[in-house]
Image (cartoon, rainbow, N blue to C red; front, side, top):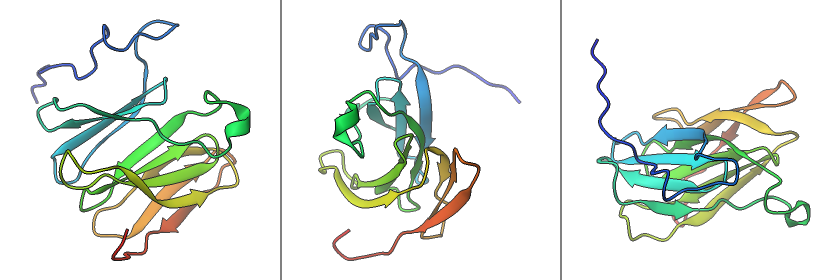
Length: 152
């Protein structure tokens, strides 16, 4: 096996944090191989096309605003089997599912929320299934069923 470095999506000059470089907390590749998502410690999800360009930024929502904007971290992301949605698991005990659409110009909207009993530590969206499998900080795992509604 030969591994070759192709390029960097995150440019350190564009993303400067108080504590230094942009530290990646999670990333996901879409199942149709057309989109790539990266989240850094600044809690902004950056979406790229399959060539690493076409950046779109989408700051995830948080469950409870009273704790402040920096009270959570994104710990897991996964694209839907059709690559038109992305599930984002956060340490503020919630999984958001965003509809991102097929084209770059499509608007991002929340289409589902799954509130959990503790922080989400990881998640996967299996191909050919309408469930999101996740792990929690309290040692439990679970599955959230995605119903296919015409408007979602």
